[in-house]
Length: 201
Image (tube, rainbow, N blue to C red; front, side):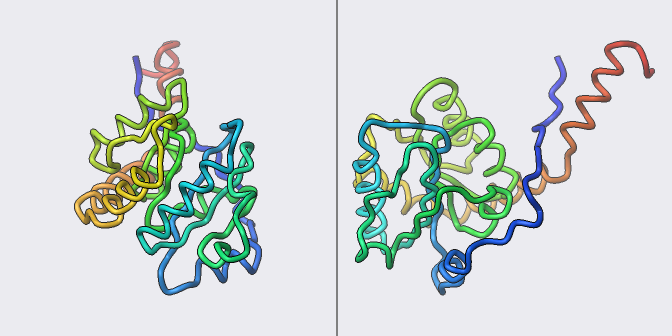
């Protein structure tokens, strides 16, 4: 068995964000990012409510990537001063710019968060997501995962306070991010493949 490191497909390096997003990121207090990828749910307004209320409790702002689940579509005008909702943004552009990411723990999102060197909170829904969430916790770059079925404004606010207030966690995330940026998973995989075939010594 060969452990090659993550295989990244870098997204559009020419990405130009909407001016509204740039303005939101330019605030004195950097917003957190919330994104749940392809996860769908019958009532996304509940998750939206928990996010908004947790941000109020912790006096933070947030960027919601609405994704496939349309999270954030019920944010009202008043709350839009605290929350910015956008369908999607390249992770490799956004994640390094925020103090923390709240995500579902999918493999590719987890890899992007780790490479960015940004601490995170996982809200796993299914499949391998709980495993990735636990791995991040064991690495010291995330508090305990919050299963989607148990999320509330209280549990989310508590996790946000931990991830923003733990300087050791932030340093570990930055150190791990540098290690991942220094490795080349694709090149390692090609070398391992050739070595297995006996093409190189």
